Length: 414
Ligand code: TYD
Ligand code: MG
Image (cartoon, rainbow, N blue to C red; front, side, top):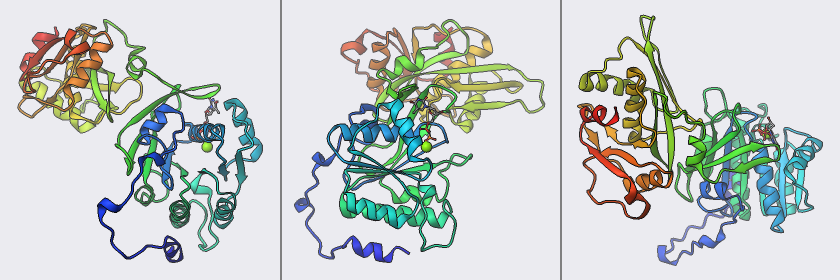
């Protein structure tokens, strides 16, 4: 499988000095959708394969049709291949998005060879395959969407991209457990994996780059789904804090690094006496095991025992925060809810917590402080161990409270 394809790539056996290889960053095509260009690492790399995954109805087709429309507006000929919807359905969606251009070609096709033939005939500037699970190769007897078919189609399309320099976007549906359906192996084959976070019940859409051979991974782009498609959110911190209940206990703000950007997120906790033998621990947006660890440390170090309490934690806005810097925020919000005492609305907290309750230094401290200051916060509780340098500019306005152990936290909070 795929042997003939590999030959087409013309791997050439002679080694080249690394400084003789040209790698021109100017090869990127900017879509003009800033939030997406950043997630891609500054635009689309020619010949790259990008997997776009997410739940059904989250906005994958919408986003990619918008991308192609943008490229068509730049005078580029682009190809949208759909095996899921009729040309008429695509036209109707396109109308909502204002997509109308003779440069944007629509092909309704599921046969892999047919798709590859069209790509090589048309030579578009970019191709979208919506979705990879509908593509069918007659070489294999299995049904479209099966592991073998998905792998075969992915492999052939990636080879076509590398050979021609045409970037290919592959839409992949996601199974209930969150993994991209069909083979996980697809993630290893493509250059970039973008994933829609959050759920389609809300208007916002978060796109995270979970893998990127051409830029920083873990970068996020934030959009809002409107009647006319996905609109970029320009000030993410403001967006995530827009519905914050000021003066409510259990709510605290923490600056989190999402890729290269600091973004303020609101952590909410609800701690209430349980009438179950095994109290509930529910964590949305933060790591469940981390929360269990923090509950234990909090009991031991601060004397706040949540052993008989149900604990629910949620990061508002549907964003997933996966860094230890959020520890202090989690503890602060749990303590606030448990004691039923609100945290001052002008305060942010961040820092990692160790098993003995020590508050540990984290990366990008200055960027976090600056973002908090920019958003009008006036007090920041942070690790003591970090360098003593004071942030300059906007960050200098904020009052810094440095703590080295969790014991000190409650005194500053309440
Ligand atoms: P879609 O892009 O079809 O999702 P996917 O391809 O990931 O399955 O998005 C479908 C949803 O988006 C659908 O519920 C309607 C909504 N939508 C809007 O709100 N505004 C729009 O302009 C468009 C095109 C879709
Ligand atoms: Mg779709």
